[in-house]
Image 1: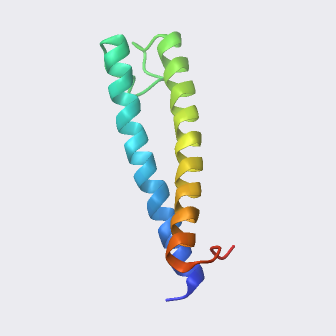
Image 2 (image 1 turned 120 degrees about the horizontal axis):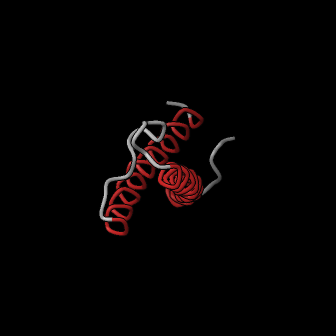
Length: 88
């Protein structure tokens, strides 16, 4: 397996794991703070604007931070395992 393919697989798995963990944390945090489940469909008729907008902002911010942390963690792990930078 090439270094490039190995890096893409490692980075992809890291991002997917971070995304799943972030979704879990955001849902539990929302439920703990508001005592209700987050909106499944923000466009649904029974979802208030405040809920839809809040969930959208929270989800976007969480996804961005999770991706950043996952990429940096994958790069750091790659360096620890191989002693060099991952291929670009």
